[in-house]
Image (cartoon, rainbow, N blue to C red; front, side, top):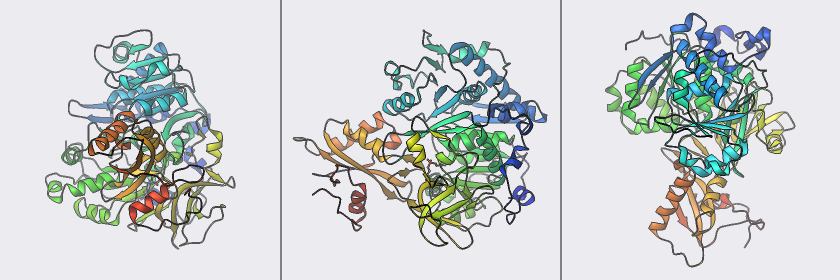
Length: 572
Ligand code: PRX
């Protein structure tokens, strides 16, 4: 496939449509892109798929999908048809109603996208689950959300503790020769015979869309709920930040199990009618470059860890591929080192644009949007319609160049609307009912560029994935040899951070290399591979407060040879 090479017209959309000096941008203006501007009724699936299928884009490719065994493409018309079928299967074989939760737990495949869009057509809230999650992690999420149905594959079925999940009524299996029973449905068999027509459920802008579970420093993972109105920001940022245009071939490397994989691996690109590439399978530098060449990818959104791994694979490899179709490269999830930007400029001939946002913000917030001159190392500036500031712990705005909490003025369209089942936790994010406090620290320079410093809590970012130390510690404590556990992020040149666990052992248990391997495997099997500690260190005793809380900050200081700071609350 050889495609016309696009000129590097980065940011033309923002330049034409938004004057940075005019502070009068209003999200209401963005509504004009959608018919619900007049009707008030909407559905993400209609706006992202059906709307294009009913237009000149009907036969435009919506999805290129490739993995080791499959190489397929689907037009917007076909996406509409298959997602209608999926909606009909869900309607016929589950009790799901508007607002109920359906989880999708499977590796990337066209069927994942059919099921997800199909569920949205019914007004169901979708909870995407990363395929690497093991039983404990799956259980926590399904139980908390009271999910009524799940779409999964026979391979992953054993990780769903069906008997312990009273709300889970239906399991839709995507695979061959599925045996059906009163709970189990052969998804593909019914897809093949289902009607390709479906009437979407019209929704209000505050109706639910997706529920993404994410980790904090304390407690179980929490369910972050996003609503239909988020589409305004998905759409606008796809234009302003991703700079998507009609001819683009766009590739987002994130899995829909993470928020990047839904907001920018489905919604943003499809709301703008853009052709998108999805690559199944594992990370492999050669396969990635090959995909860019074969599909003629023009806009590419990935993460610092991936770029650092590509960098590690060497410049010679890059030269084996024709990457000249690329015109815009972006990054999210962790600090993007200036070194990586320099490397990217050299080998891709484009400076990688950093973007900052979080599961809770639902869409990009502070970015090197396409027309903004990049300052390597800075996350960029807030997009139009978003107000960001550095505030102190009382919510007072700090002057430029002063370090503090990175905060956002409440009320952007893609802001989370709930922490599932936990209104107190939701409230705890806001200061003075005005500022959403991100948990990141940083500063703003005198020109309004934001610079990231770190997390103020103990959340670990490893290979761009967010891991809560509490979740890992809880799993470690389930191991019979372990008495106490404290988990920290340890800086790592490739992965940003790796997970390091400090553990003390029960009476009579001797430390050994075998035990280390066994504990690693235990977390891997129980939680997820990416949540397993890469390093484990045995300690006779762990530093604790008088109330018995493990002091991770002291562990971190030990690890990094830093001063331990105030120890007045430490138990002797
Ligand atoms: O610490 C920040 C880091 O990732 C956190 C959010 O993680 P998650 O909810 O998993 O979402 C990741 C992708 C949207 C933030 O609190 N983070 C995200 N982007 C950046 C970043 N850190 C530095 N630079 C970024 N561009």
